[in-house]
Amino acid sequence: MAANAALDLGLARLARGRDAEARKALEGALSLFGPLKDPSGTASARVQLARLDRRAILADPELRRLLLDDLVGDLTPAVLERSFLYQLFQRWRPDIVVDCINTATAFAYQDIFQSARELFAMIAI
Image 1: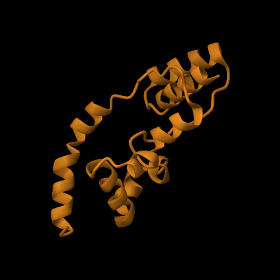
Image 2: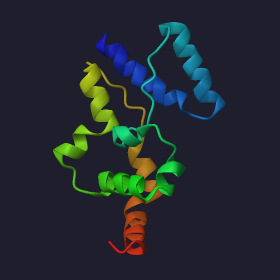
Image 3: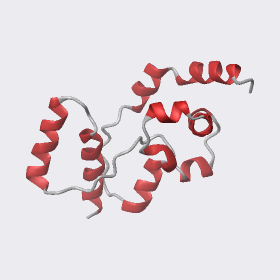
Image 4: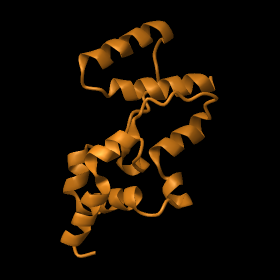
């Protein structure tokens, strides 16, 4: 059952894709494995923010602060324990995880460190 949780996580991330190829792959997986749980959300965010729209987070000063603190602040045990991905792994305890999240590329395209520095300068932190 734990291996199925890892599959669920991977397929749920795939399901969030907006293109037809991702949807077709998900439909194929559903035909092979049956219904899946839906743990979709932003893997790098804290649980509180994981299912919120990015625009809503960026529009709210407090939510934006929480996101930035988690992304560019120190990686403490508290940050880890409140992350969406960490909590999924703690809940499901998968034996196998297929990584289909290219987090490094996502961060590189966003240049979050420069964006965070600019934002902190704008809000005088």
